Image 1 (cartoon, rainbow, N blue to C red):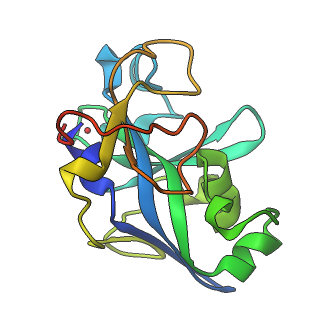
Image 2: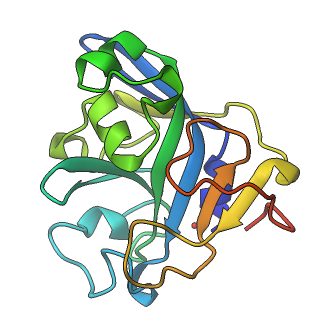
Length: 191
């Protein structure tokens, strides 16, 4: 859960032929691999989830419900599955491109869910395995989020292990996805 907490406030960027897209990470969810029944790695390594078992700092992109591409950051040692789902971003650059990709709502809601991030950034399975330290997808430091501005809650949008406190979000952000928490966690710390 350390990585999920640490990603809050960082900047995700994607250099595309249409221009630079960027957003501040305001919501994440940790998935702890083979011990986590909600993780794609729960039943072991497959062709679909192989990236999760690789080095930390790579993109694990999957197609969800036949509709959305979702983006995770791998977050464990090689051979050990672990990933952090990026659930929401505050848009910073490239909003016109994001809107062309299909969402025409308020700016703060353009990337307010994992499917919206995939659509807004134009992600596909071709992005699976990309190294965040080189290439078009990148993660930058951003502004750290103080513990008092972080809520830790149960995960949402899944059916197993929902009560684990593995969802991290920035309090007060209008970009946090459904079920936004209103109270800070006792301690904002915490893959």
